[in-house]
Structure formats: structure tokens, C-alpha cells
Length: 135
Image (cartoon, rainbow, N blue to C red; front, side):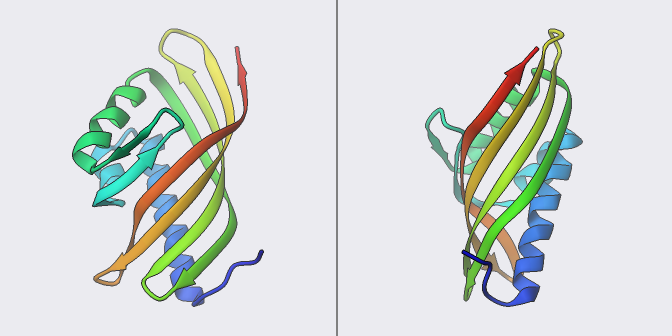
């Protein structure tokens, strides 16, 4: 499958991913949360969480375990239909735990988006781990 829909929208979705990844690498909770609709769903493989009031605290807690996070995405297809879109992303994570361990994870996101007031937001992110190495 190849990407489809207006180039400008696909570029804006790529910029949303870049904003998300930058916020993760900077441990910036406000920037990370600003990428989502209030009623979005985030599923990290441990059960879906719906609503920023539910999953932002979970993100904060998860991030508190790390001293460094490298977070890099590679795009699969981005499909835009009007003000809704779907995309697949492959994520490479380099995580340094405060306890001294390191994790290298390759994962996959299946995303749903909505365009509101000229800006794209996540409405759903479903993540699965494809490979994980721990040292």
C-alpha cells in the first residue's frame, strides 16, 4: 500500500510525528499532550487508555523511569481522506533506564488522526513491540 491524499496533509502528519518524537526525547509532557485530542485513545499493548486525563499521567510515570530516550520514526503508508487519516509508523527506541539498564525496541504504531482548525491530531495510537533487546 502506498500513501494517498493531499501532499500538504501527509506532510502535516509527518510534522505531527516529529513533534511527538521531539516531545518524548525532551521529556516535555505539555508538548506531548498537545498532539492529541482530549478524547483520544492510546494503547501501548497493556490495555487501551482513553482520554488525555487518563493517559498523560501514565506517560509521565513511564517516562520517569528513563534518563535518556532516543525516539525515531520511519513512515509506512499515510492515507488521508478528508479530515481523517490513518498511518503506520515504525519506531526505533533507545531507552536508558535510571536503574542502569538499556532497552532497544523496534515497534509499530497504527494511528488514526483528525484535522481540526487546520491542524492534525492523534485520535488513536496503537503500539506493538516487534523486537526488544535488553542490556
